[in-house]
Length: 105
Image 1: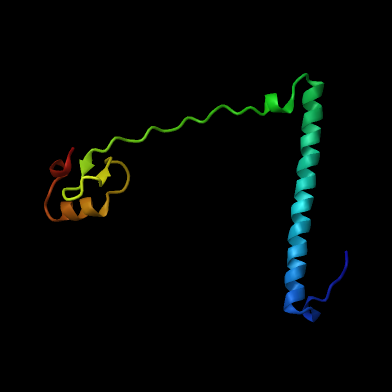
Image 2: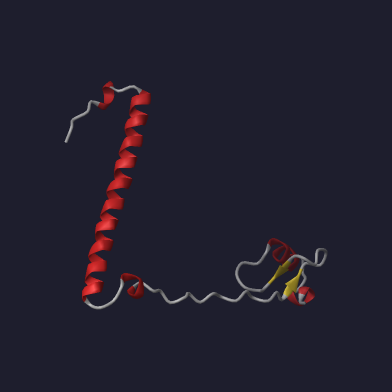
């Protein structure tokens, strides 16, 4: 490995060195990934499969959005499903003595 006296370099030289190191790291990682992919492809072919067949991922199940249960009294577009943290407008209304039933849809 080359010994570099970093204290002797100017700021532009240090920044260029930083860019070069970042490129070298990215290139190294890309080469390692390509090598790993080639090994996995070879093993899959030996077993009678393609890597793409083995790498198929089951589709993730998406959560359905919760239906709103409460509506802001002044702006009907603002709603809350009743899940998670209470919105500020609900918390303020409850603190002033109202109940959740007052905002039910």
